Image (cartoon, rainbow, N blue to C red; front, side, top):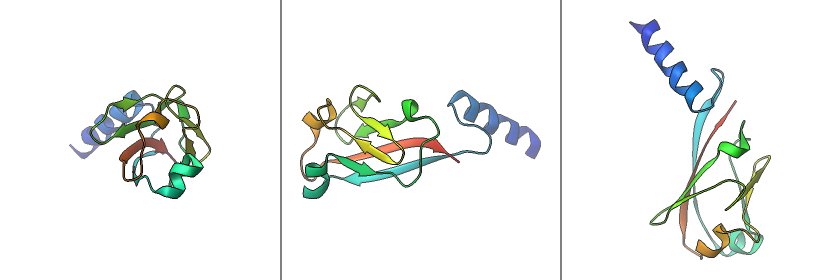
Length: 100
């Protein structure tokens, strides 16, 4: 039974783009004056697949990598991208991604 559960978890991770040795991370941010000025935040880990990072603004809509924001290493930035229009000081958002 344990092996069956483990294989199901691995199947779901594979479907989500995560390799078996990777975990899914969720980072929560609240925009402050500094991050609003810098136009980026630092993630807690380096995403394995930057183009599969999920970003949701609380009370807003799902944002798309490469269109609304860009991930380079651990930096998630929104300079001159659509996400910039949604963010104000105090705006909260969640970022989900896979990493080793």
